[in-house]
Amino acid sequence: MSENVDIRDFARLHSIIQNDSTNTTYKYALLRATIEACTGYFHFAETIGDDIELPIGILVEKWLTYYYPIIAHEDFIPQQAGESVKQKSGVRIAFRGIFLEIIEYYQKIGGFAQFYDDLKRGKFPSDINQKMIELIRLIRSTIKDQPMRYLGKSYTKEEYSIYKSLKKSPSIRKDHVISRDYLFSNLGFFTIPVGMSSVFRLVGGLISGELSLIYKWAQFSSQHDKQNRISTEKMLDLLQTYEEDPRDVQVVRKYYLRLLEAKEKLICTWSGHEIRYSSELDIDHIIPFSISKNNDFWNLVPTLSSVNNAKSDKILSRTLLEKRKNQLFKCWGYLRKLNQRRFDNGLKLGLVGNQKGEWGEVREIAHRNLVKRCYYLIEVLSYRVYE
Image (tube, rainbow, N blue to C red; front, top):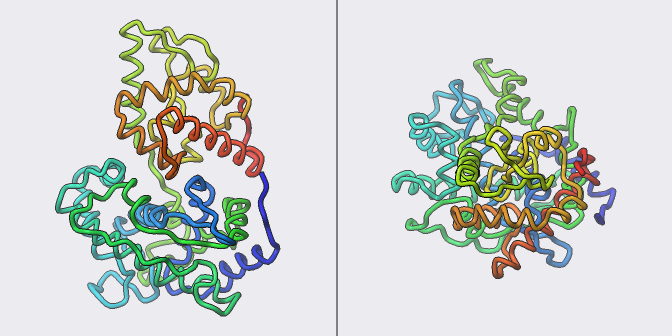
């Protein structure tokens, strides 16, 4: 995989983490989200001259998942210097108030898991959808006007030195239905230099120790907790919490169990051997959940339990992905028939991006991008390979 990397881009990243002034945790959230956008959603990237353009909705979705557990925590956790539990206005992160209203609603019906499920499906109740519209507007404008503006200023002495000023942001109307697909497709774009995107892709996941974004974020929150209830360690746990919602896996498992009960021939996606009994059936994440945090239908395939155990958190080799391509397409076809809209939305966000075509073309695009993703994980990030 060819990456254009300039040592000055590494120096710039070091300066940002170490030297950029920090009055809120926005810097850490933006960098963390950008790294995840560059490593997990690069199929959305468009090259424009010396820059890479990506949907800003990726960043917005990441901020929702980062800040939900922090704002929902039973102890008040400051995310801005001077922010305290007693304040109803004044010094506070821009979106805490409206986000807290949404969180309080979801605390009664399943918490973050239900919130994220409604986001994936675009199933927010009408009153909550209106609050989500307000929240999305606030997060998008905060990202644009705060960390994007100042990130890198310690190195270049200029504003918007890494993130180019956004084009005029599309309006978010009151009748819009908020979902992951909506966020990725309708909030506009941001750009970063090609060189910085390469740095994020190559070393973003390896930033560790005292330069770790998550560590710096946790340290900031602990230092500004005037009641001394939030330790750095406790905050680290919160920032690395991402609970797997088992419901999508259960839906897929039940579907394949019905096929077995109907005496349909079911083949293990990776070995090619027949799955004869329900006790032999496992649902494998093509890209392991520990890496992808993805339970979308395209990422869930039937395998023999023995094969799934052997694969574990390994990454599929290019050879195996090519060899088992037709069987993978068959599995995708099954689940696409089960719920086409849900499958297509997940495939778009996970592998295809904004490329369009008939199903035969789209699945080929998805497979090519899956091969690229796995190659990147194996060759660049050195994950173990499954062949």
